[in-house]
Image (tube, rainbow, N blue to C red):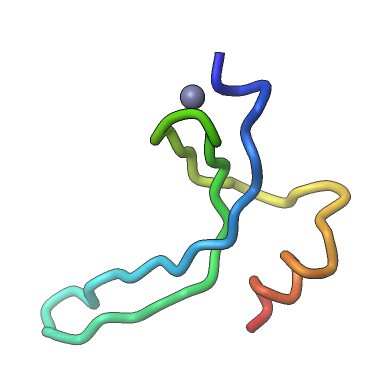
Length: 59
Ligand SMILES: [Zn+2]
């Protein structure tokens, strides 16, 4: 299964602001599988988050 080798990766999520042509971007984390294209959005707090990834989210 993918789950065992999933890695946390920083991603930029771009979303359209409803009713406008504007977009907003936020820094988020995703679980990504290094062996295939599978990914999963991270929900909630992550324990033992590395300072680098925490800094990414806070940007
Ligand atoms: Zn996989």
